[in-house]
Image 1 (tube, rainbow, N blue to C red):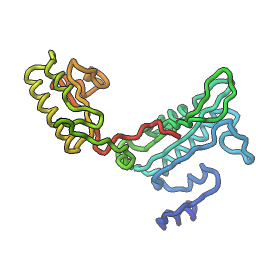
Image 2: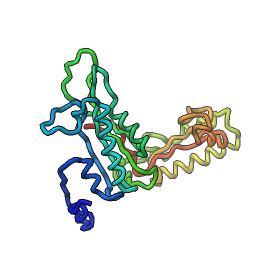
Image 3: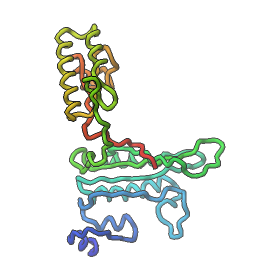
Length: 270
């Protein structure tokens, strides 16, 4: 192992360490399972002419992809099981054919052990100039979030949630942040021809509990799906959706919103 890297790891110093050199060779000097997070945006293929050569200048895009995959598999080795790998990479054309390089690389990585948790779309809004008269402008790039294991990696979702709007009480009735008071659902329960009388009684009771949870701040909002009254979430098939079984057995189910707010979208603004 590189003595500088070894000393840095053992010292537990919280300060930047800059290492200049060949990415693959430097990564090979780092011990297994030592890195918490890797964020990178490597040179894109056939986009720049670098004075000292390097990745992105390969004659064939497949050779370019192979070079990156080799590096990213070393990242896999050095990343802790609790770590994350974020990869931003743009696409390229060859003979007017958009090559889909980012997704080709993502698929190769998942075929070799990486788990892809999200594809975040970086919307560059303005983007660069494009004088082509036979295609639209490309003003986005994917940012892939990879992990080594499906559970247990570090992810502090609560720190980035969007703050929920406040619940109100209007004329004595609890009204959620998006205007849900339960009146419409009560009417649908009353008029339902698919719910049994027992299911209607249970639906009224559960709806009242949910409204109290909204009032107490235990949940920020909710949606109620009633058999035959609304489209079911995802699918009516029990093979596809666990909600379908709940709908069949109870005649209704609730979608509850987290009191801490919603999660950020995967299409952030630039």
